[in-house]
Image 1 (cartoon, rainbow, N blue to C red):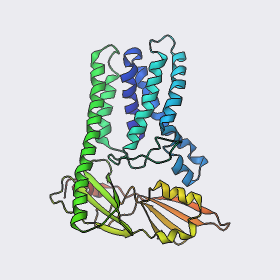
Image 2 (spheres, helix red, strand yellow; image 1 turned 30 degrees about the vertical axis):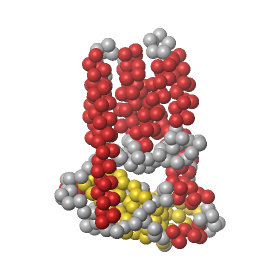
Image 3 (cartoon, rainbow, N blue to C red; image 1 turned 90 degrees about the vertical axis):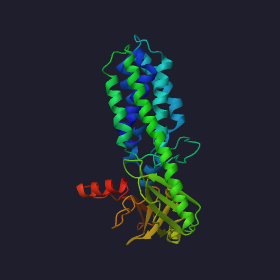
Image 4 (tube, helix red, strand yellow; image 1 turned 45 degrees about the horizontal axis):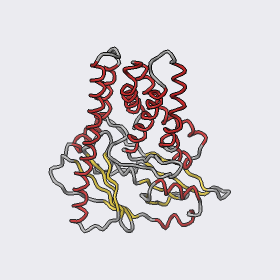
Length: 337
């Protein structure tokens, strides 16, 4: 999830564990705990594209990181606030749950979180919420801000913190339910249209859990479709794109390319480029394909061979032009029009 959301979640977790003991210091250090895992981005300038994609949401998002670092940071805070009433165990739990809830919330998004690093580099992803969702973050933020204005012994402080946790958790549960409802429609249409498939990934489109996108893996390619829970008809118009795996053949011996394909979990298509090939990461789908003019894949990786024979990688991000007309179109589609 985005940084603000993780700060809010971390602050709330910190308040839950140590708020009665240290007041707003629990909010502050909880927010810091919720931020620390995302500091892995500072390694990006030291890594190439594939290394950056592999490292993101790995070490600092793992359960092992929480187990190892929480006691260390808890000990440091106990020394820093030795006159305070919070114990080493409470500071330790603050960091542990700050790290773990951060990683688990990230696992609800599309990218994938390596929870079991270094034993596995598989990116756990539940695909039930977009990385930025105001309906999750804003009510939670309001509740946590209100908490900060009450004395640590005031019961209203606990009430507002619980309210924020309850509202945000309820929204997450709703997102899972919405995903199940959308999946039923996607699968019913696949069956009705006689489309054979091996697996699929459904995910919410940006900033909502009403309008869903699906990418379906078939034998020789992928089907893409969209459905809003507010659509009047449960009919999906699927588009098909061949995978073109044969275009990878000249490059398959390269370990970096193998890792890149592993990161996509096999959800990719290949296109020829002026130089080399383009690999479309289908996990994120074509979020603009619901428009009449269609859309491009969000993440595309350009792969080509340099003069020295080494493979080169470059990430291409396709972003729509966000203007008033686009937002109106998007709102209309979300609401079933």
